[in-house]
Image 1 (cartoon, helix red, strand yellow):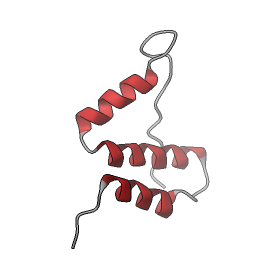
Image 2 (cartoon, one colour):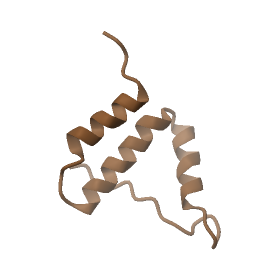
Image 3 (cartoon, helix red, strand yellow):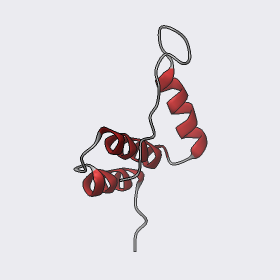
Length: 69
């Protein structure tokens, strides 16, 4: 059996959990998709840090990991 690609993993998460109601669950889905696409923990942490950077410094925005549905 072929190994799932990061894109396939992310799409599987979207398909399986994307329709569940609740902003906190949607945040979890997005977080899990980002983790699947970035593959490694260091890449994920770097991306989140960059996502939180803004005009007011490195903590301008928050990253919400959500709640598991």
